[in-house]
Image (spheres, rainbow, N blue to C red):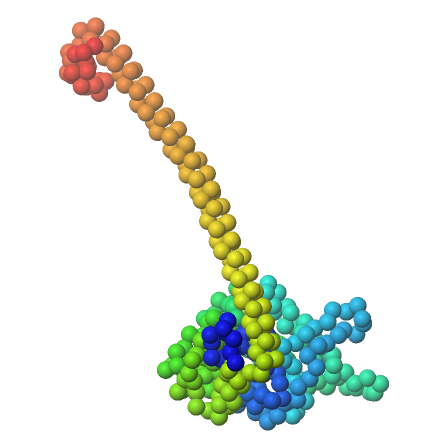
Amino acid sequence: MCSEGLRERYVNPYTDFAFKLLFGTDLNKEILIGFLNALFDGKQVIEDVTYLNTEHLGSKETDRRAVFDVYCENEKGEKILIEMQRGEQQFFKDRSIYYATYPIREQAIKGEIWDYELKAVYVIGILNFALDDVSSSSFRHEVKLMDTTTHEVFFDKLTFVYLEMPKFHKTEQELDTLFDKWMFVLKNLARLMERPTALQERVFNRLFEAAEIAQFSKENLYAYEESLKVYRDWNNVIDTAIQKGIARGMEEGLVKGMEEGLAKGMEEGIAKGMEKGIAEGEWMKAQTIAGNLKNAGLSIAEIAKVTGLSEDEINSL
């Protein structure tokens, strides 16, 4: 059933359709729960999730709306928002904080007395790029509100987790933890032709089954192809912008280098010219003095000692 344009066995999870299919549908709830439990690594255990509306409007019609990739809550009522960020965005951290305001404000109890107690909110960003302002080589960053004096967590109900996928470099043989395996799958799924032997956990049975393109219905196959086209077009736009930026940078650097080289060359040329002119002036002065001394009857040796000219130069005068 796979079309001629598709050569991969498994979907590309960076496409909008595939990510939502794998992590945002009741049919594949097991996959989402498995990923979240691996991500939290025992800090909390999620037994069930309920998918929530991914499209959110502000309190007024004129407010900007927000559309999440995956939005759900666990059995404790804690909100979990997951974003697959395919391309670099200048203010991505700002955006993730803005998105966090929606699951926070939604908890306000309307028409009743409310003491402002909140359920925890988790914002998870899976980034297909490296953050420019983060120098750490670590691919995972967990961020909470912190007291900058004590370096202790000030508020533990708001957590941001950023996963920089380009910084994950482990091979199949280097996968130590279950979370490593999830990262490996997310990064390499579209390039795999067989299920890696290291991924034997039951949750991966469901993932590889759901991700196999040949099993798609005609409707899902068409939707995936369209989503893949959008993803590839987006990548081409980014690559073109990068290449143009590199070319422009090289051109500007070359022009600047030529200008600096010309200025430096002129400066060195003037300096050398002055140096040569002074030397020639001193030599002509020495010749004049030597001629006067020669006319006065001094010996050639004495004149050479005074002027610094050679005997041959003095004899030629």
